[in-house]
Amino acid sequence: MAIQQAQRAEEERQEKDFDKNFVNGVLERERLIAEQEEAEKLKAKKKAMEFTEALKLEMARKAASEEELLRLQDEESERQWQKRYAQWEKEELARGELGQHGVDLHDLLHTLKHQLREQVKSDIAKERGQIEQEMKRLEAIEQQREEGEKLVAMRHQEELFRQMDFHQVQRHRQLQQHAIEQRQA
Image 1 (cartoon, rainbow, N blue to C red):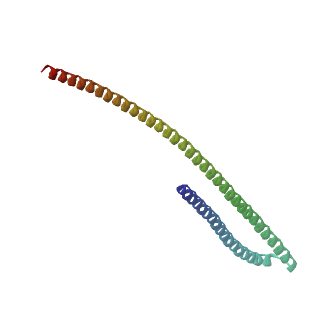
Image 2: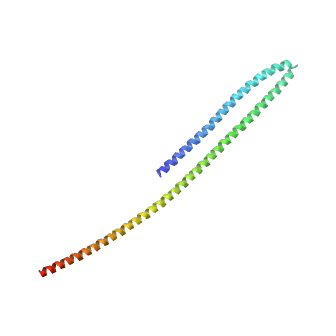
C-alpha cells in the first residue's frame, strides 16, 4: 500500500514536473517570438524611416509644390501603416494557433496518462486474480498432501497394531509352550 502511494506520489510529481516543463517551454517560445517580433518591428521601423527619408528627398525633388509633397508623404505613411497592420494580424493569428496547439497537446497528454493509469490498474487487478487463483491451487495441494500423510500415518499405525497383535500371540504361545515344557519336566 505504501509502495503504491509512493508510486502515485512519484507519478503525480513527474506529471507536475512534466506540466511545469511544458508550460515553461511554451512561455519560452512565446518570449522568443515576442523578442523576434520586437526586433522585426524595430528593423521595419528603421527601414520605414530610411525609406521615408529617401522618399522625402525624392518627393522634394519631384514635387512642384509643398502640397504635393505632403499628399505623397501621407499616402506613403498610410501604405506603411497598412503593411505593419497586416503583419501584426498575421503574427497575432500565429500566436493564437500556437497557444491552441499547446492546449491540444496538453489535453492529449492528459488523456494518454489517464489511459495508461487505467491499463496499469487493470493489469494489477488481473495479476492479483491470478495470484489468488494460484494461492487457492497451492492450498488445495497442501490439503491433499496433509490428507495423504494422515492416511499413511493411519495405515502405519494399523500395521503396528497388527504386528503388536502378532507378537502378543507369539509371546502367548511361547509362554504356553514353556508352561507345557515345565509341566512335563
